Image (cartoon, rainbow, N blue to C red):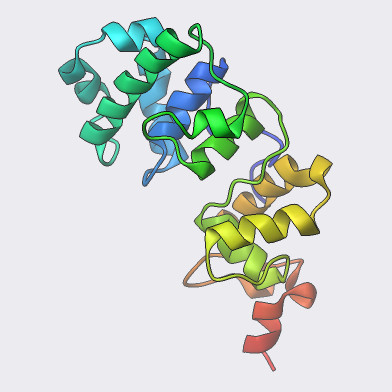
Length: 197
């Protein structure tokens, strides 16, 4: 039905590459980010590389991705902080990750889940929509949704369930025109029931 949700959607080989790819993915698509990083990471793939890179060069590499000037500034600053304060390593704690420029709770959770396989429940637009439609959450914002999902889903399933919700949201449970007639979960779905009674 859709891409194997056990696979990472962003392509990277190291936790640092995972962090950079995730930072780039804000208000962009994984496909677009993967097109850029498949070339960029051949040129630069360590905090040292990005800290040394001229800001204009970095902007040129990532200009096809939205809000690229801000992302370039944050990537350079984050790279330098990793060198200065974390011995060039990406921290494995959410409270440390969110101290980095350009890293919010969702980005931190994605890095924990995808780069380190540490249980986390990142809530993006797809996870928010699908989990609330299915009744896994009943919330009006991502923070409440994250807390409810963490409570309602077994911790060892957080990472996989996160990816499954994204895949389902992209392929079936679309924002404007959900494919309810194709959905194998429609009998469980609060959204489907409320729109088909």
